[in-house]
Length: 515
Figure 1 (spheres, one colour):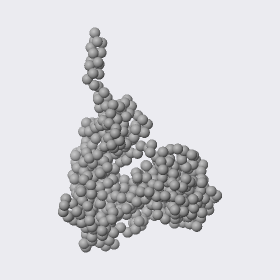
Figure 2 (figure 1 turned 60 degrees about the horizontal axis):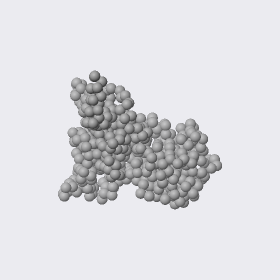
Figure 3 (figure 1 turned 30 degrees about the horizontal axis):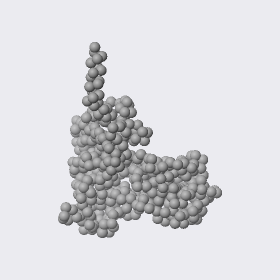
Figure 4 (figure 1 turned 90 degrees about the vertical axis):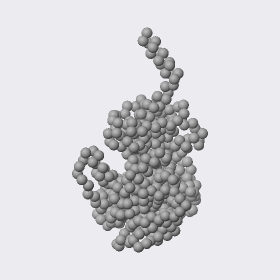
């Protein structure tokens, strides 16, 4: 492969590169070449199309409850999360953080000099771990341990109660569409001809691009931009909006934005990409920004955002299943316009997270097989962007609450007031809650910290269970931990209840007790 095309997108399956023992092991688990589809055995309680997170959880859960289940996958068991999403990206992020921490170790008195680094070794580690994890999602495990009939091939509806795959017809009482989503590139003139990477191809790299431009400063773009910068790439992020992570509070995104600048990531915010072209070995983006034009050249372009639901080629019309802007059209109970068919995951839901797909699959099982009446609208969905620091959120933002006519009280505890954060040298960040004014009811929360994704769970549990700040204040937190920031929020709420009138009453009581 020449310098000119080594970072060129190849195919949607190019994450299988390089051809090494780890990817061979992965393929043996998620798409075994010698797989023989079973013979259908009567009518299935549930036929699941798609073996990503939602499909795997639905199939395993239903089979575990005694249902006869068929699972159809045309490409790779495990879907995006295992193959081109959460698993490989977090493996990369951990490796990049190790290099970053090693280079910053002098702050703690470590004097071993500049650490060596091998991008190829870091990527091989990721592929090895991905292959190990893939055993859990393997076709053989679902067949042999869970009792699911696994069909590998193109599945499509042949009628309102039938799916056809590999010339076999699977009759069903209920079906689940769990086909996920795929990377979608923006309509930039010349981008396809110039060549680009997505999350579906970037993990196949064995050589670090010296210069990388990332299109989009959403969660995927930010995570990978920081990882590659810490590996040693010269990274430029191009974003149309005025800040990175446009969904998040400005001060939360601002902390990460400042970290990016310190780490040498160049930000081109408020930029509209008007074209892309090749100039020798360079890939060049043409930008319109601040009333003028700019160019940014790189060895590789990474499209860091945009997802399109996988709904083509499924024969939805034959089953009477409608689509909408999110993909497959579902109601609040995940039913499609065909009452026999349900859907879950990225193919039908705007919040495209692995943990959301898991939660939706559990609702699907209850509603499709056991006449449940569980509603998606009742879910409390947290999320986390796995940058350094991480930014985690659950529930409503203050702006959302006010738009709904709710009076809001916001409390913020900076990490600089938390002893463990001081000792760890990780004081840039905060914990924040939005409360319904006059109560301790938690409407939403944001945490900015290196381990925010671990810390947000306490607040997610509180919102889901109807627990307020009073309950958190009664909970003993180990000292010292960074999660003590959440206890400090409860302390701040308790202090807010100490009005001047209450203070006078308490002082009077204590004076009386003194005699």
